[in-house]
Length: 318
Image (cartoon, rainbow, N blue to C red; front, side, top):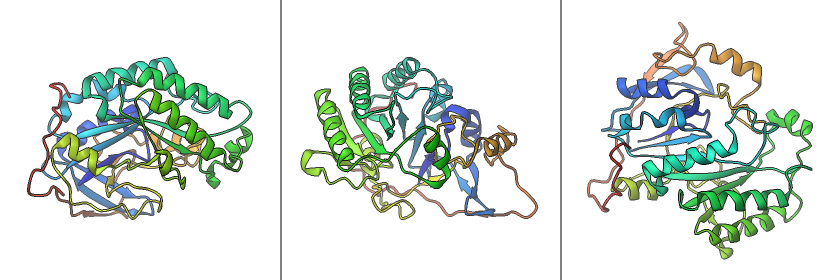
């Protein structure tokens, strides 16, 4: 089983202590976002967890406790964008995040920290020229701390329409996605970085733009030393290359406040839901109610029986 922590919220930044408590107790409860009275109990022991994939804009609150993960294979998706407070109001300053990225990579190794430059959006302030300059600056800063960068373009979900309108964000012009992606690819190559696109219908394979697998069985095999018998995640968009995982996060609790975020309905709902945060609760920002039905989700290790690779050596404190 692969654990995703989490596409729905920034667990390393805001809920690191809760996550560590869940590992200590070796299980978590996850509320079904489509049927909220249905709650799954998911075991978290290292004998069934093949990898943990973290998604974050600031892993620093978790970094002091990486030794607690010594029995697990894991890696990070670290979103590092150049936007200002009008787009990402609650993330640390850019220089601080760059420094944190470098420190995390120094601990874990460049292969275990994936740089995400996403979502790419356009308005009068954040132009194509802005992205070319900013991407080149960040690539130069991170060239020794990661092996690849994943890009995607903003999806115009209905729930973010008010923010999009207020910020003057517009869909890319015809061909703008491809032209920018090709230019970013050339910049990435100049710094020895691989560039991949996440869930984008961009036919640029001839240029060398890869299609991202953010939950990546090949990377897990490389860092863990074992292959997994795992298929494509059918719950994601058709363009998504991810393999199956179980997400243990929750919607409407991320405090980053990003204006493009699809995982929060409104600031008011986030403020209301985070009031239920309890480090010792098996449910993230929630509690079991009388009408809830709790069931044990069947999970198992997906490792193939025969080891096929030599794992990258995990650092002593990682």
